Image 1 (cartoon, helix red, strand yellow):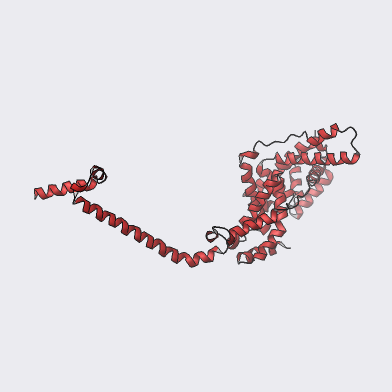
Image 2 (cartoon, each protein chain N blue to C red; image 1 turned 135 degrees about the vertical axis):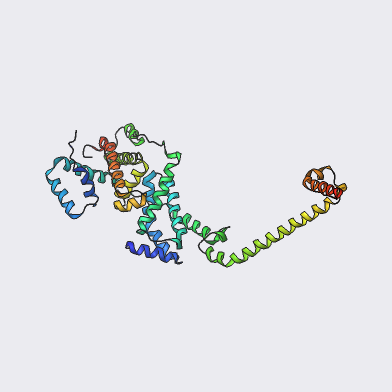
Length: 156
Length: 191
């Protein structure tokens, strides 16, 4: 079993250049005299040597081509390039007022259409006899109004 | 190329200079591929993650603010992607037996030449180192790789992992200890 020394934790800091010069000198001084620390020091260096045995991988042959294709796609040559990409920012600024105007016009159009439906529903309430059962069920609120209006007329 | 220049290049890229990005990409792509590779020891995964790292840098563009050295920031992105990938279940119970195929092939050869034996032993050693690294928990693995293979300081690794410097010291200490314990049986008492 290896002997240990409480200073051995500081060896890691020495190895990783994480000590101030003065502290580093003190640890080096201790290292010269302490056998367990020398063993630990050798062991740490041996581990680094072992780890360096793993070779570097070369860049795979298709890596660059695939990457630049992704960049092109992001950058304006893809289907939805308007919404993304580096140049999209400028276009977004230019088209923002136009887009806002289109959205507002669409909103106005939808609200006018909806108002039209309401007017139609109100006119139906005046001609309740023309409604079939299905329409009555769908316009119960109008029917209630109509009954209430008739009631008021009778009361008056 | 100095590290300050990398920040300048990234800032120039943010202002629309595409060649600045190309230069950064060429400088760092192999380093990032190797970092991701040593995290998983799977080239396909390393390739995918590395591409994502550079896409994120590209997308950052004008939003980039230099809060650390460029390489520190780049490896922070890579570390986060690797740790996220590790969290996915497919790697959780991934364990490669230390009984290598090469060893069994060597046993089957009646009289392997010394050269073949040396190659096989080399591959066997690498496989054992690979298994030992892969057995480390995610943050220990990241800290050890960033320190041993890329030479980042504790402060830089703390930024990359979002931990305090003292946590990083502990992670590296435990990681190395773990590796020594795993490998000393195979590589002798020197470890």
